[in-house]
Length: 253
Ligand SMILES: NC(=O)c1ccc[n+]([C@@H]2O[C@H](COP(=O)([O-])OP(=O)(O)OC[C@H]3O[C@@H](n4cnc5c(N)ncnc54)[C@H](OP(=O)(O)O)[C@@H]3O)[C@@H](O)[C@H]2O)c1
Image 1: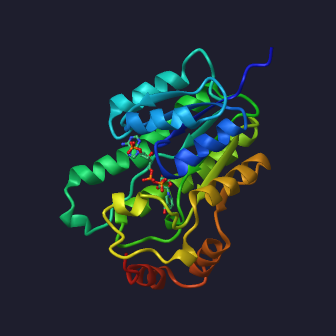
Image 2 (image 1 turned 180 degrees about the vertical axis):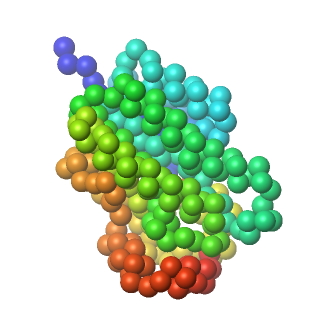
Image 3 (image 1 turned 60 degrees about the horizontal axis):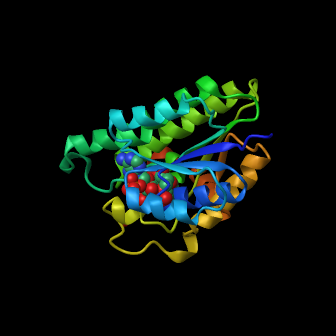
């Protein structure tokens, strides 16, 4: 009997991660959903089609929470697709925000992602894959989110190198860069004093459809979701870094 493929999605209680979990379950994956909010994960599990889904409640900004997922990735039944989606933003003046909050953001957006990727690759086989959630801000440094944009620059650089290293093993690595996406993300990051204009905002469904289409075709290493976002990143390459930082700094959110 053919065993079902398994996917693990971090940050699946809301937003982009939630839609990833739904779409992967529709494709027949058994999905393990990870986040801190247990009730929201239960609601999601009730909605997912097909058998074999499970939740793991874990805070990936804590080493203990990360270890819980590492253990799952090292478990008897292999995970075939890892979606490293959990992430938080943080708007504000770097020096006014307590250092612990910056470190916690780095723990979640970088350290957890690196540890889970390492544990996944220890078991991965030809045909398996990883989708890493980066951001257009990995190319466009945003002075109002200095640590966040730097964490995403790390994710893009790291994932692009991994894409190269993993090709020979037949493992797909997709570095996904959404732009503004309609989720709770900006409000959770302490920003969005005014709404982000609708014309540049994608829905999480658009981002996930785009990502899975690209993943199926093994496009990579980096995919920017949305043509307007692709134009912004292209434009950023035509001006100096100093000009770019000034443009990005003038954007009020
Ligand atoms: N929305 C955008 O505009 C945008 C743009 C570019 C890139 N992205 C990236 O896309 C990813 C998903 O963002 P989103 O917009 O879907 O955000 P979201 O709606 O705020 O969802 C974030 C998810 O991450 C989980 N999470 C947050 N902190 C966590 C922690 N310490 N441990 C475990 N899980 C945690 C949250 O669940 P719990 O609170 O239940 O833990 C939630 O499920 C992030 O990596 C983000 O950087 C977003």
